[in-house]
Length: 65
Image (cartoon, rainbow, N blue to C red):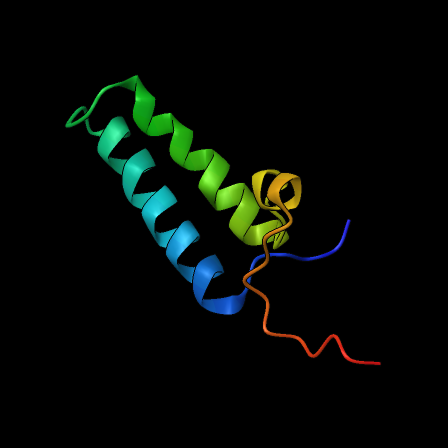
């Protein structure tokens, strides 16, 4: 499992995920806000299965050998 989520992408995922979960906990949005846990998890793991499925990566690592 190779990292495919870059630093800025990770920060955005974690912040938006936490926002969705907290809005759901406070009752401002419905239960769908718990989907923010997926964003938090993919941000913390630096891996997104959907990115992998489509061959996308937001990591800016040099891939030249």
